[in-house]
Image 1 (cartoon, helix red, strand yellow):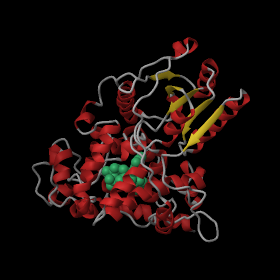
Image 2: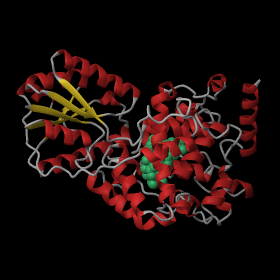
Image 3: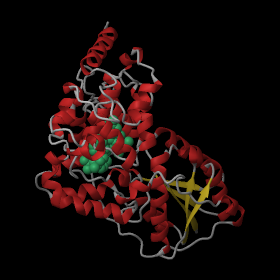
Image 4: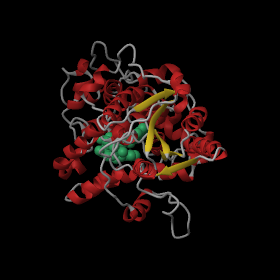
Length: 456
Ligand code: FAD
């Protein structure tokens, strides 16, 4: 029989349960990716997607197959493709996002009406969200007990990439849907590629590169000026590597750092777990108390934050790193998110939307959890009254100002202490704001006053 394999965010060939099953089930497979702008793929991640698909197509070609890239609404295209090819089944990996899963269910129903099966497998996550529950069979709301219960259930079954893939032609009735993903214009992504190499081979190389540094991970992960983390997040987002492989390799390597790293993989699992059990947390405050929060609406201030012109060096450095690399260090993500939602009083959803636009690892589950956690509105969140002081964070995690100097060349001449808060000494730097857009202590007091008003 013929089958269809529909690639989505599983852009790899190894450790791929859905692809393995598809290959075992059919004599020939049509391999397809459907470019759907309504998919929620924002700009920076689209630049990544374009290259990742290019790599996948090469890897498939090297095995005798062909990846067909078509554009349009999958709800129309997938059933049309299945009917035109006489496919017995369409194979997918689950996405674990509420809207995407609902769409898959509609497509499955449309296929079923024509007697065609939709076969869905895992491979994106390690945790079965419905099986990992508290003793009273309710979902966990706190990370640590979740992780303690979930981790022993994680398994890895290694799967080699297929040696060959039979090539199937696109039916002529769908030739008109054939597409390519254009390079961004202007080439604002050009700065990305010194840092990043999308694709499965590069993802596996990143994992190899992490191992000799793993012992230093628990401390180095908090220092934004060093490459202390794995930078696997965009590879994981696009499914260029199965998290089970990461878990297995890191666990076998062992030693100091392995548990800490596996716990971070656990945070990704927790983000998807929360989204599964509380799908409305994508847009709504997890804690409804915050629905009455009088968020500050100020497009000008929001823009100053977006483009790194707040006058707070660590915040501005982070926002510029985001713009240049499509990525930001986790410690700095927390600081810029806290600054926006606490000192500036701007709704976390506005910050989350900017991150979805600018991050190559933009991921609905992890981004929403991260923002709600920092904003204090989320599950297992930092309490709202815990407000990061960005100058203190800067002095603590970037003591020599190496990260600041890298991203804010205009501040390079300032001393190691002054660079964290030039306004404290009345220093004026041409081209840089004289003082923060919001005064640090007034912003903190205003945030606490908003919280006190909510509590009443
Ligand atoms: P490492 O330290 O090497 O961690 C390994 C992997 O663990 C990461 O690749 C990631 O998959 C996972 N991980 C680590 N920390 C977290 C976390 N706090 N939550 C969930 N997963 C985690 N991560 C995204 O992948 N996409 C996002 O859109 C995203 N938005 C965020 C927004 C905010 C406000 C915050 C505070 C965090 C966000 N994170 C997001 C989580 C985290 O910052 C990144 O996963 C991490 O910085 C990626 O770098 P790395 O791969 O080098 O991390």
